[in-house]
Length: 333
Ligand SMILES: [Fe+2]
Image 1: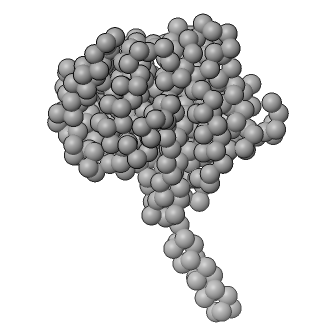
Image 2 (image 1 turned 90 degrees about the horizontal axis):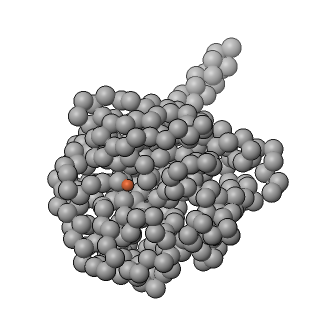
Image 3 (image 1 turned 45 degrees about the vertical axis):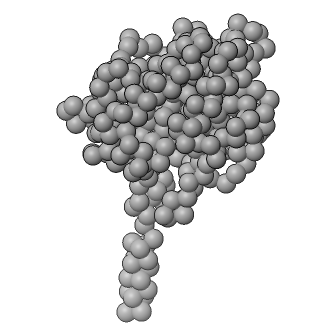
C-alpha cells in the first residue's frame, strides 16, 4: 500500500513539474499618427513588456505621389517618439505595411514609388537580412522558438506590392511568388502561426472597407492552403481600422479560426458592424493590445486590450488553440 502511495506521490510531483505555466506575449501596433503623442508605446515599454511586437501597417501616414524622402521623414518622426527605441530594444519587432506607409491610400501594385518605398522600409525596420533588396515585396516569415521549445511562426504578408485593383474580377492580392512562398511557410512545423496582413481577412461582403474577400479569389485561395496542409493553428492578425475587434470565421469557410484586428494606437474611428465579430469594438483612442499565449497542456490565447491612460482592460477574450483548424472537411475544396 505504501509503495502505491509513493508511486502516486511521485506521479503527482511529476505532474506538477510537467505543468507548463509559461506565457509568450505579443502586442499589435499600427495606424499610428506620427504627428500626435503615442502613449501606447511607453506603456508597452514600462507596463506590458511584450516579447514580440507586430507592426501591422499604417505605422505612419506617409502618402506621397513623388517624394520618397517624405516617407522617410514620417518614419523618422516615429523613431523619435518617446519609448520607440526602448521598445525596439526590449521586444522583437515583426513588421508589415498597409497603404499609408507603403505610400498611397488604398494603392496596390501600380504605386509609382513602390521600389523606393520598399528600400526605405527594409532599412528603417532593419529587415535587410529578412527581405532581399530585389524581393517583390516586403513579405517574410520567422519561427521563434520559446524557452519551453514551443514554436511561434510569424508570417508577414505583403498585401500591397503585388495587389491588383479590387475591381479586377480575377484580381490577386499577393502575387505568384508570395503565394508559393506562403505555401512553403505553412509546411514548416510550428505550434502557433500568426498570419499578418495590413487589411482584414475575415470581413465578409458586403463591406465598405478594404478586405481580402474583395480581391478576386485571394481569400478562398488562402483558406484552401490552410486546409490543404491541415494547418490547425493559424490565426489572422490585421489592421486598417482604428479600433480593436475579434472576428470568428464563418462556418461556410470550413476552417475555424479568428482574426484579431487591432490598429489605431493613437487614433479612433466609427466602426463597421461585421456579423462575425465576437469581441469589441474597443474604440479607446490610446490603447494597447496584447495576446498572451498560455502554454499549458491545452494551450490557449488570451487577447486583452488596455486603456493605457487608466489601465482598464476592455476586451478580455479567450481563444482555445485546440478549436482552431479545419475539422471534418479538411480535404474539401
Ligand atoms: Fe490607418
